[in-house]
Image (tube, rainbow, N blue to C red; front, side):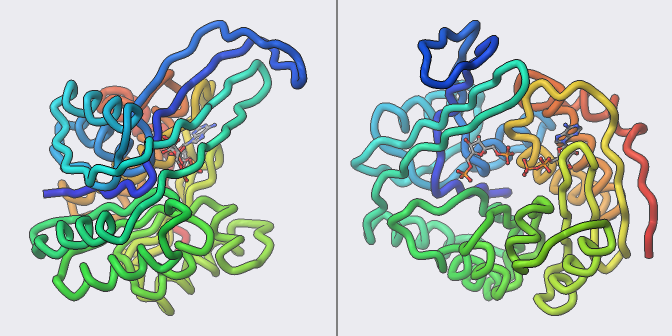
Length: 306
Ligand SMILES: Nc1ncnc2c1ncn2[C@@H]1O[C@H](COP(=O)(O)OP(=O)(O)O)[C@@H](O)[C@H]1O
Ligand SMILES: O=P(O)(O)OC[C@H]1O[C@](O)(COP(=O)(O)O)[C@@H](O)[C@@H]1O
């Protein structure tokens, strides 16, 4: 079974404003709410690909109930630890020229909540896969993902990690099986400036060889992605298209990689499917469907760099 862990889920409140003016009363042209947070999005996309998963993590209050109701309505399994405080709301504002995001404050995770989640993970076996994705709530230590990856590695459970900042810096020390930083997150990780593809390849190679991370997929939004792993180094172009809503593009890329990797065990094909999935989400109003991904797949050009 694939388990996705979202320690910091959110209701994504997506607001479309014609021409946003700061300091004025703005009225939305359209708005809607979705169950968000990176692991939850991975579960949602896997579901659209016909793959079942179980969503884990923390939810609380009426906003948490919105998320569990949403997943239940889509028949996506979930076993969240219940908190006292409300799950956050993240505002995603789409104006004519740009997308602006305001991610909310996390509820408090108490020690017994955290322990309950660790106990769930302790029950997993090497037949399972765990996706650890998103930011950490402020009340958790930056080493939470590192601790989980180390514990799961001991049990032979592969871990897929998508996070940023200090939690990423910590967690790579424990060697997750797969990471998907975007190029900004990669630059932050090494505190280095990235100017060209060679810079990305050299940093991704360090993650692969020095930290023993099997698959490193560096996403670059409209510029596609670079993959580094035992199968080689690949540069993948993104299809041309009109990006209408890029929220969830990275999560779709993660789900795409897992889906194709499970099917083929082929890193090149998995990375190609990942890029097509990210772009399919960027080009649609919500998360991608499998048909949308397959339609874009031939447009993702894969070049073997090494
Ligand atoms: N504007 C865009 N045009 C085409 N593809 C895009 C665009 N934005 C994102 N994508 C696709 O989604 C993937 C992940 O996007 P990215 O923005 O790098 O991730 P994140 O959301 O994690 O920062 C990219 O590798 C690409 O395939
Ligand atoms: O946990 P974080 O880093 O605050 O991110 C949460 C946000 O990321 C998302 O999962 C989207 O992520 P991506 O655009 O990177 O795929 C939203 O659903 C959510 O609001």
